[in-house]
Image 1 (tube, each protein chain N blue to C red):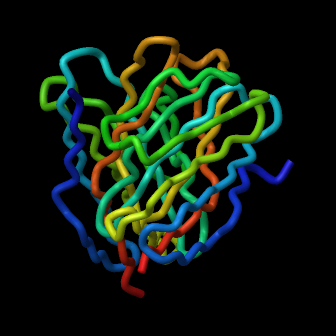
Image 2: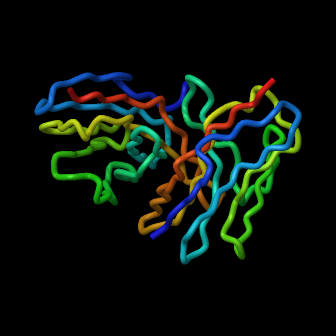
Image 3: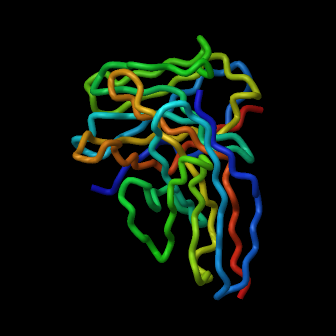
Length: 112
Length: 116
């Protein structure tokens, strides 16, 4: 079975400071990892996925298979980054079911 | 296309009543997922449809829960004889098989159920 752990429920960072949201996973196969974000009063949306190797809104995340981690980073926090962030894992099941296993989330607050 | 829609957005019911939620996925998305999210937790997988076929159900989905996607378009999730423990946000997501190894799931706004 797969599991995703986000050790920090709350994280406060000053504007302009670096941000790192931690995510660790356990899965015996080869997973795909995602970060989803939920801004205030908005729906859950994809921020980035490890396979794309993109930087979205200044955020990056590198999959470290040795440490089974997928930490989300941004060098300079902005006030609009305040949101709830969820790390998620997908393990393709039978019939193409790519259900997501989510962590408990980290609420990021950027202090002006 | 405005994305995945869910109806109703809020539902308050008394214990023992039946409730039904509806999800309309993005057009042409053949995959549809239901998740449940309780306070302080991330979404948890409930069930998955590929077109009209329900291909997997979580152990979280007791016999009181049933989901359908009769024509491979919208889906309904029914809870019979609701219990207070069913109070949660019910999320629907849809995706379409593409070139990526894993499709992007697009989420609806959710239906918040409160069982009194």
